[in-house]
Length: 159
Image (cartoon, rainbow, N blue to C red; front, side, top):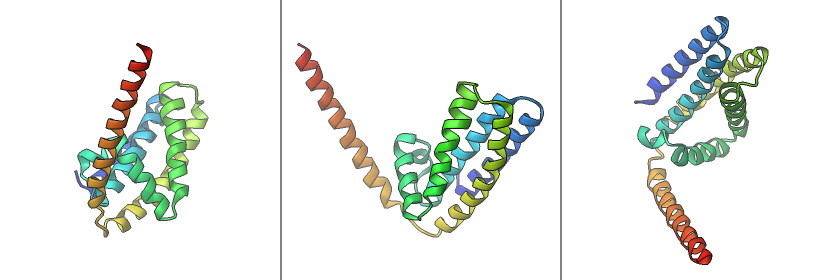
């Protein structure tokens, strides 16, 4: 999937969320809102040259997404991404504790974030950051090795 397809899908999913909200399906509207934000996270990574299969992974893609937005001086977009994760995704969909009004307000705000992200993504597509993929794969291997070693130490100390 290329970044333009992901952008288009994010817009469609967002519009589905608005429709669900209007129909009174607030829980699914919240999840559609979050899904559109996640699709744009993936679109940013793909635009930067990260393979889609890697961009889908939070463990792999989220640290890169974070570093890219910070390096572009767009921590504001990152902060809002985490806000939607916490509000629409967790409290709106999983915990179902947001009011319909709160969900509606968040969905309205989300439209501006989507438009700003699309601008950043299209500008970023002019760069090629594929080399990050190899570096991140090495980091994750090291993380896995250190986790296994820590687990071995814990198991040995319990015996």
